[in-house]
Image 1: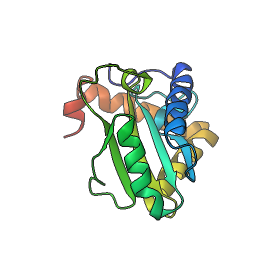
Image 2 (image 1 turned 90 degrees about the vertical axis):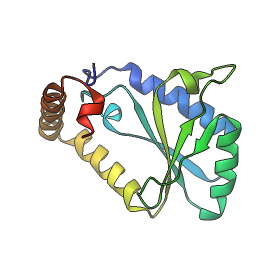
Image 3 (image 1 turned 30 degrees about the vertical axis):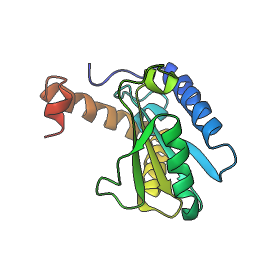
Image 4 (image 1 turned 90 degrees about the horizontal axis):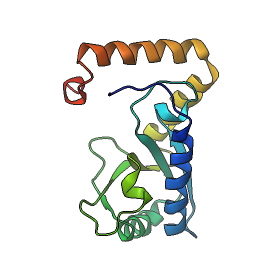
Length: 156
């Protein structure tokens, strides 16, 4: 199923992923934010954890990129969204870790970037406004129903 009712395990999944990323980036000036629909208690969502790694110092980006590479990520560019760099997992790792087992999206966002601002504003708005959360969940279920719960159809 594309959209699922909220599940409390999502917060635990985020914490597990965050812990692994923090270990790799231990002395760099970063903050890891849990964003996206799974970060809003009670909100239906695709069961994919969205994570924004906030880069406070653009000089550190190459260090972040190198360290993430060492734990199995590759840089996938900004995919047309300035100040938001996409990182994906490498395929077929010999010894899968929690990072491979828990489905997630990882973005490195620059502190003054508009996309980071949008992610945080949207998340915080939904967390504080039950009426908006309910309306958004209904819209998600309606769209998923229209495309028969097929993610590929939903993207078109």
